[in-house]
Length: 166
Length: 193
Image 1 (cartoon, helix red, strand yellow):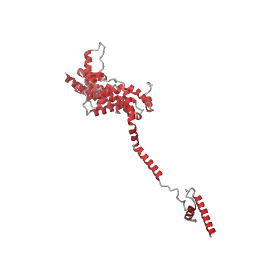
Image 2 (cartoon, rainbow over the protein chains, first blue to last red):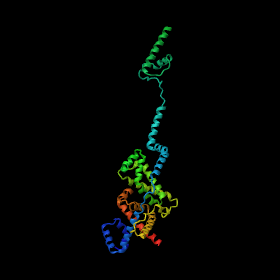
Image 3 (tube, chains in turn red, blue):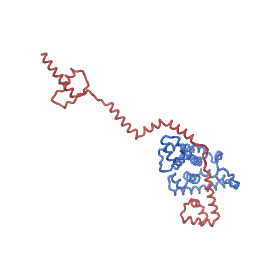
Image 4 (cartoon, each protein chain N blue to C red):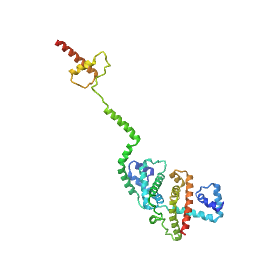
């Protein structure tokens, strides 16, 4: 191994990056060569000088950092809320929930709708209800059975009255 | 309070105790400032980068993985903050590393020990000045490895954890960095003569 080769890998040697066989060759050369040995010392000196470039902070950074944290918290509150709400994972379910809520609130439900006629096809419900509506004050249907019975009674009373008039 | 582990302090901050963060700042501000200064080159910008790094750490504290050491995570944030700063500064003219301001907090104070050779101290100070300049000429990867390993004195394993690379890569980068520094230093000294 010659000086040029050793100088080329002297930093790898110092950093412990060389395989054993190569390291031994470099060591053998360094014992014999004062120039390469001086080069090694020079690199070691440079490395120790690098350590002196470490510095301490001239000021306590905490007051400045605290101030910036507080400013950030104030300034970022609403944009942060907006950012959270606009995230797809939040926005998509929120949209679906709002849509369902809107449909539920706006769906046209007619509470005065007559009861089902399929329960007793033998009765003429439409006539009964027409009679009932003439004789009674308009009211909200509560129980279809009660309404039907009321209508039947009203109808029978109407028939009886007609018979009496005759 | 000051004896709490980093993890315990982090949990307190996450729990809403902002002032507990001052413990972490006090513990690590010197190290972060030193890294920042060796990156950006002047004390004012280094203070800004240090504050940026702590602010980022504060806002991302919930993402900190307690399986790793807090300071390695913080170093990583600081390095990214310094790199971001340098990229933004590229549009502005860079300040020279041998600017007067550097000497205000600059080199190791000269020893008062009478046994110390004044000439050697002067040579070392000049070497330090040239080294600072040379470090700024290194590529980002080599510079980071040199600053963390040789300037800050972190072990190869710690640097590997910070940079998320194998230890072998750190060894290689440190060696290449030293080699380039050695050449730059030699060139600068030749020019000075």
